[in-house]
Length: 421
Image (cartoon, rainbow, N blue to C red; front, side, top):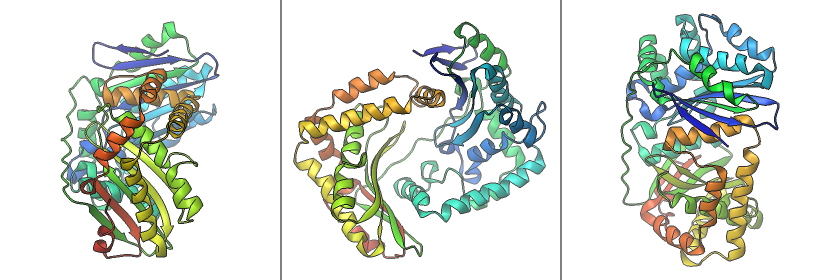
């Protein structure tokens, strides 16, 4: 059972006690990511995340930041998304105070030394190069650019080499001051800890958090009336592509229907796409489907890597499976399998304290509301074959289709002609 406490300054604390573990996670999530950026500072959220590990007054060097947790076998990391940025430390339960002190210290007291900023600039550029060299990863950014174009939702989370080279220390300080505030921050403690003490401990550790009101992000603009295609040329032995449709945002109750559709199509090894594309036709090694729902956007997408010579066949095969869902109801047996798969995977994913922390905190930061797993399962169980047919007919329309490709091709029109249902 979780508990949410909101302090007078707006800081939210989520506690999730778990007595059957020897671990505890301290997790801080701030409601700011790449969607909050302007074009000239694209990538600043991610840049800032890196710099929180470069020194505080108490721990003045990168080594002094990371060594305390290394000494106790702790796990720690940070990440940046479109809607949030997170920092966490997971330790053996008796080291809770160390983890809380560490997370609050880097979050509130990082110094951003100029020399470290310049060094990290090069590190991030190499990180960008790494993703550019990996089509299986980079295709996700091509997909976002196809859907949303030249606006924050369409930009790479890491930014681009040009912006990363130009972001100044003052811009970093200003961005942190404006966005890392009490009302945009969630501190989550999950695992083995004493409930009667933890709120006061967190309150004390984060007492210096800013009380300014954070800047809001711009609303995503979506426009599409015909099928769209974006091809990124690269000499590869395999073509990587995303093929999908615009769908619903996270506040739309139909998102649970999309979750089931996603699993039916490509969320398990006995799914329709895995069976047809890989097992029957041998067109791809990896093939899967995902449903992504954010506060202002949503899509369902099939992801695959196919033989360059058989890419057309892979695309048309996926489209046929999309269309089938609009023509015939799924059977009771297949529907039950998809639902149980979702519930089973969610249950298994929440075994660890860090997974629990992210599960609860991410709901709070994105939706402002938290559902327990059992409540989500009830919504999944309510999805009917009629719901799936109705939603499939709504989203699987030619005007919603999008195809992003990385491979040895330059002719977009060739692929655009395939986008038919």
